Image (cartoon, rainbow, N blue to C red; front, side):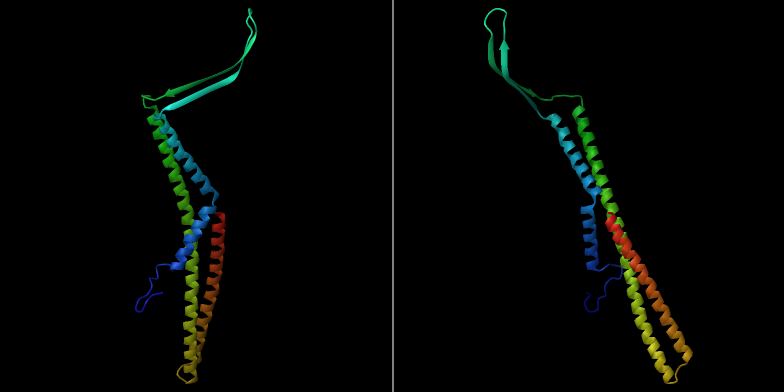
Length: 209
């Protein structure tokens, strides 16, 4: 609430509305399957950069074989031995004519593309929800203004009626004031209907995301 002599900026939504909007956007983003898929693709692309970098690292390959060896020479006795062997190979890339560098550049470009794709999707959802939410706030503000207008018009009708009783005005003035009050009440009903419609659209917007 504003302090003495200070009025709140009418162009800014209240703090609780901002928090509610932020919570709605966060909840929609957490529940949206497209966002989860986009984030998973982004992680895959990020790991792809590390995989491309591995071309500069040494590679160790190991092969181990174990088993029985059966020997049946034409001359001599038949033998069956237990044999095992292994091979360890160390490779270090010294020069590959830019192959690894190109792989890294391609992986980085894929990762950046995945990041922008995810950001685009997040911003699109946030924009849709924000627009829908602000439309609801606008309709609610119009309803509040109509209620204020009704209260002010009712006071005018009361004053005109008192003045008529005192002979200071005519019944025509009272009729005009009453007609004005009926118009404002009708306006309030229209605005409440519009608010209800916007609220339902906002709920559908949240569910669709």
